[in-house]
Length: 226
Image (cartoon, helix red, strand yellow):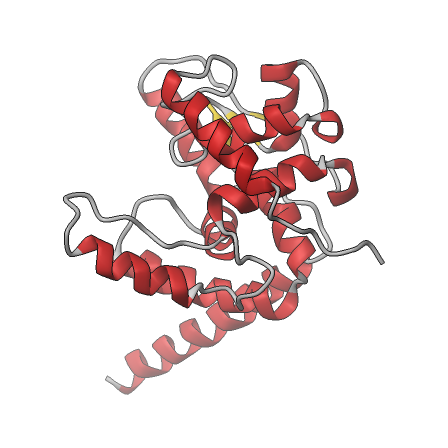
């Protein structure tokens, strides 16, 4: 029993060392591949589909400010104010979920970044616990701009498409730096389910969401560049 306890202690210790080390390294190193990309590739192979994985990392200043505002307006309007967890949205979701058939989440961009970079998409108590742990780490070690940069580069934006540059190339024949407000709002509108909804061929629902996001974008202020 003592040996098992010692082994478990070592496992836990190494988990903390490696996870903190990974977060510190990724504070500076581009994220070229994520667990979600790997999972999608395996799903494609198993189903006999051609393997698709379009992704190109671009730095923060090469991503349109329109897209930054659109994603914040759509996903996490208090992104620059909270510490990784939006208590206002959590409380609101808890109240609303008492009446809703399908519970809505209150995940912040920080939480989604932690999940996308370090974990897997399927929801469980274990994943949620680890997601909270990694959210605390990236909020401590990364500035907000870095969290947003990683999120915009790693978010799923279509079938086999990941990040701002790839979706700009494939859906709008442009680059992430040249995305317009309208294009950015379309991308943001699909984020809850980018494999069901398309920013290239938007449905009436996505077009309505686009207009809502465009209005909300007017209230989003990005920090001034230092």
